[in-house]
Length: 377
Ligand SMILES: *Cc1c(COP(=O)(O)O)cnc(C)c1O
Image (cartoon, rainbow, N blue to C red):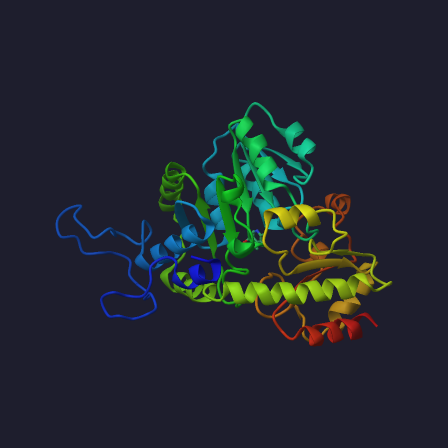
């Protein structure tokens, strides 16, 4: 089955009982048992719910893994994954990860005794050097947010394997439509499904897929034990949104390519970060490990004042956090998504005050270009 067909036909289709072509919403908390412990696979909806199960089966097939799990948010998904580890375990984490990822690791899990080293995971030597005897996992995002740095998933997987550590990849920016980290050697892939998977700015959710069934079992134990599950309505919304992932991702990318080229040709833009541009340092690697470059672009307009001016003038780009939806969004990471990262650290990473991030939507690209043009004027 090819990818676009898979998006329509993978997972559990429809409802055999009624013939409904869409999987129903099972808005239910508990299930009748025929005898003690005798049931049809569902006992209590924290442990398992049919609509959530349909979504979990679907994402597992799309990522090419053995077990899928759905959570109340991307951060709930990550926090449950991090609960695999014990006090004294060490993690190597990308230094350009989502602000909330940095926050939960550095301010919550370190308090519980996890040790962590943040490194640029696009530098293999830095990853190797950060590995310790107690390193249990490497956590990375590729491309990163908001600098769009690309990490070599297969090469980092090798480093992890040599040391008996897990590789955990945040695939939010690429989605299974463009990139499958499990096929490249990762052990766990997770998503903020709030973004491209949902795609319509109407649901907050997280999805996890493991390659190994045993690891999937361990994570299901934690999903049930911790309880940060996705509800049936939101599971259904995701199932609905994900059917159009293929056509949406194609449009996001076609628009992003044109916008990136247009921005790169302007003399008043200091730097354009888009892996689809041939001069991007991660371009060749991105071409090798993914089928597309996605719809995220960041660019530096020189100063915080100019960035604020642009954000005040755009008409079709909505000033908002988040990304990956049909409408184009614009933000200044230093003051929004990445405000939880201390300023000193932000500047060291290159997340300058003039850096604007856009999540390119699926509007007509000509309107988007004209809009940016008048805003930059
Ligand atoms: C948004 C985001 C998250 C967090 O997901 P939530 O659904 O907001 O909890 C994690 N990683 C990346 C790359 C994100 O963009």
